[in-house]
Length: 218
Image (cartoon, rainbow, N blue to C red; front, side, top):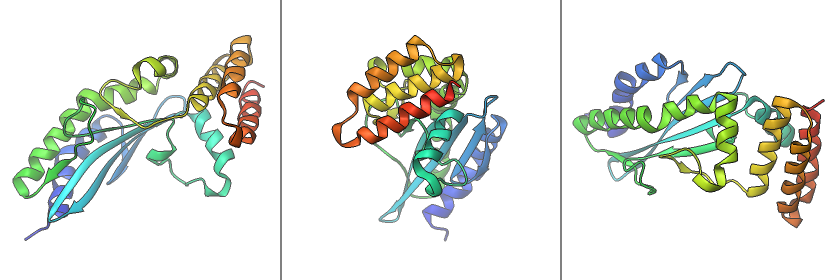
């Protein structure tokens, strides 16, 4: 008799993967990617955990703009992964069995019928709260809108959003604007506000980030 992990993999392959392919995502379980017109990357990762004969599932989502990936290469150096992984994203979040409620409840697979039911529910949740928002974030205007409303809305609707320090959000906004329109008074104002938010212990990182943003504008 197949274990729950194998049952989940089969249900995922039959139900979720074709839908992701239809939306332009490529990859193999558990991670698929879609590259936008500006080389920004959206990532869908279906994380699993085996517990007491059950397989738990949740969907991790992220968007990594091309200019953010450039920064991560500077930051990580030789530690930069060869492919874009979900943790590399600028805007990251997760979907779960109770989305959009702000809880951390996983889907549970216990047998063949529940594997199919979970796959259907995961796909429905992705279609409602995941894929449309990822696709919006692949458009520069959508990404900038999200960054500029982050403090008020906390991230894309329906996502349980990974925390991001306020200074990093401000630097990201400065990167987005510099990449879009070059160096400007708005970019310099964002950099100044970001610097004021940088913890004393990581001021060196603020210096490097500021230089990186100004380099984007050249």
